[in-house]
Length: 433
Image (cartoon, helix red, strand yellow):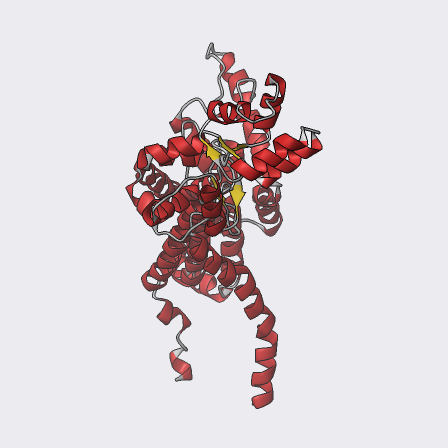
């Protein structure tokens, strides 16, 4: 008994490892990222402090006077500038006088610095005055500092004295890295787009699931069940083509059908209907194609599961019902459907989670268009985190959207288990008690 248990644990270990690595770890990382401000601008590692144009814009509303001083270059007489003058072969007397009398002096603009240079004892020429002043031109705009201390030290070196409160405000405004925040969820639930995307998702998942993934799949399975074996096998193989076709090729065939030069336009053109892109000309048409494209793929998978489950029903039940005078509808109602509760639960749960998480066919067909009318939650999370027109990919916000999708999927899975009475489905038969 112990050896059988050990063997069972050994055999299940790879599956447990796969679940941890490819499900639990990504979900945990998604939850962590959702509480951050990570984006293309911040990166995923620690950031730096940089007085960039966008941070200066924020500072102008917080500390307008300080922002103005930071935006303007300063002229600082320092050793780096003096060394540069020596390399330019500027007179040694000029260099020595600057080092002796003016070292560490800060001038707020070029005019003041050049006025001081003109007053030197050796009287440099105008050309030399320009050369000398250029070597002491210092600006913190776009300079990067790894720590706050380095930033504050550079500010002190330029003669900018800030209070502790001003320093913290400046550090917050200039930090280019990510920070911990719950702003992603607040932004998500207060955004006007959230309700629209959520309604799109509910409409898409429920319609495809009910019409195709379960109902139409069941109709296909039952229809082929009552067919002779040869045509039934051919028919099932035909309906598997949408599932086994590469998504790009599959969607491209639909586009050939719907383009303004496609088959629909060519056919309707014979009756005077002007050609147009039937897939993207309106939201209603876009939804029609999105549902059909995804529905045929889902129906083929459901048909396969239901057909396999139908073959497992003892044929004796059908023979006995025929002897009792049952017709096809009565066999479906009293034999097939009661025996199919477990397959229906599996297909409903699996296909719901699949529809919630997958967006590849919608991306290839409409990319959420026209005007965002077919944008569903998973596609919106992809656009936010990995591919958008704005350029700044918001990893944290996209992760928050994905985490909400995971939570919704778990809730729906538990709800399905309750509706289909999962405990009764897995209970031991009464004969074994």
